Length: 153
Image (cartoon, rainbow, N blue to C red; front, side, top):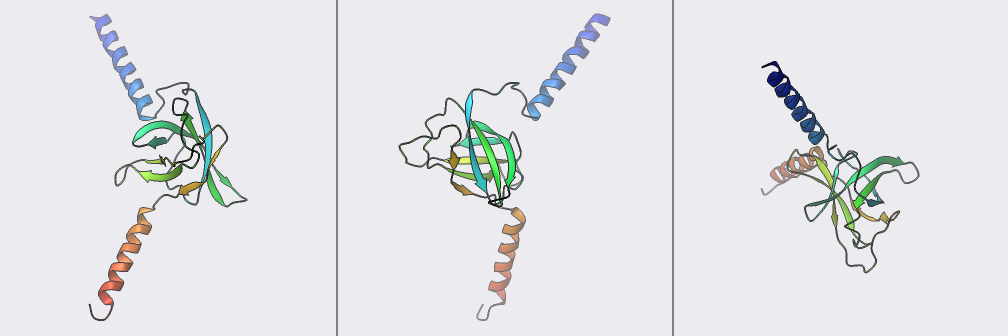
């Protein structure tokens, strides 16, 4: 009886550990082989290290480093792209998106049409910053107020 209770507790603890690792995106202890590229953004919103990098909705990598370039006055984001996705065009655009209305933020890549591919150390030059929800709501409300107070409305 005591052995079965102990086994049940051990299995429960192992399940909790796996759940915690899954929630923290730490299920892989060593990242898959890949290459790193950088992108500069004016605003990265709530982007974090280990946030997903997606292309066409498919997870193709993760963010490995976030910093600030004091010469360009922009956030610099290092993306690690899995090696199996090695044919991404060099004129690819990087955008910061939010999954759903209040979900996690991630970098979405949109392929360009260039014949050359991104390689380790390249910079993605076409970027679009995160849309800050508060700014978007403020702009919407301002436009709505301006429209309703204009003469002839």
